[in-house]
Length: 257
Figure 1 (cartoon, rainbow, N blue to C red):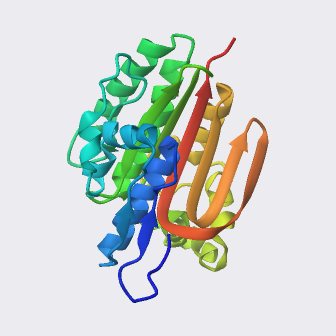
Figure 2: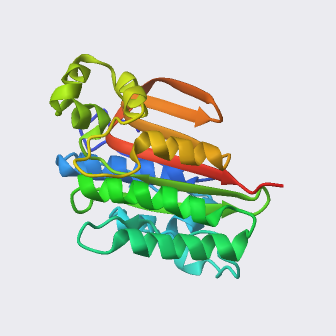
């Protein structure tokens, strides 16, 4: 993002991006929502690459995040085989969101890759959806997914711009000491056994991690300026140069040979 030296609104320049992955699409959209909620006006330069522009149009990025859609997207040809949800789904607490997501995700996986563990994937994603819906207000949490045929890989991205892991845990007396810790340290804590900010049951992030690892998946999470990547038994965490309120997650699943 670049600022205008003459005091006008800053511009988020996407013009030179030629490929969007689900996580990047969700993160950018939530970034725009977060700043607009604080009356920070941000202009957006749309991609000039037709493939990138077509993807954003197909998943309804412009509609979902209130970004002007270029007229050229109307000229894109239809695609015969859909490999994505073709939407950025709003995780609305007033609807049966988890059931809707599960049905759409199951259909996407079965239509594209019968070798993916569809039952386990849906269980993991539904748990995370329920978690986001429980903590998010209307218009905060979203989800999208994309299947990549050449690598037989499914990527699911979801997130919100809510209070984030640090504030959510530190609000509870037993985790109050986390208020003075970094976002990365709080993410690590959130993945420990039995750690949760929920008042009722659920898998918790530790069990989400275990379930993801059991099917050979990869989990990436950001909150504030902290991040964690979990691949197999390896866990890498640290701080980023930028920060976004809330929690954003990417899940990656590959078909087993």
